[in-house]
Image 1: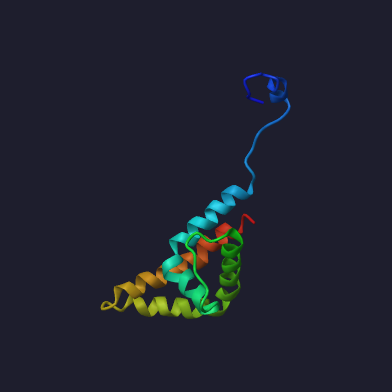
Image 2: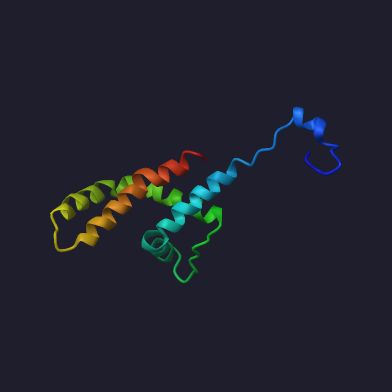
Length: 119
């Protein structure tokens, strides 16, 4: 439609170019995956698939599979996570534990559900 011959000029009135809707979804999944890869997804991957290589730049189907695992498992440990967060608030000696628990809570309560909402 925008080539040098100008043959496609009339088509501009009737068509529009858009990116596939999967592209923003893919990018959002990759951002969430990379952000929590070292702390959560890497250890989870190695626990579920011992001996396999974990990739920071994983394929979308791997990322979506692990997000699904997390969404399905979360109701079983949501209460324990909240309890641990409550106990960690009083623990002055180990501030990194509080940060890690809060980070996991944000991942499970906000980031994975938001990305999943666009599937």
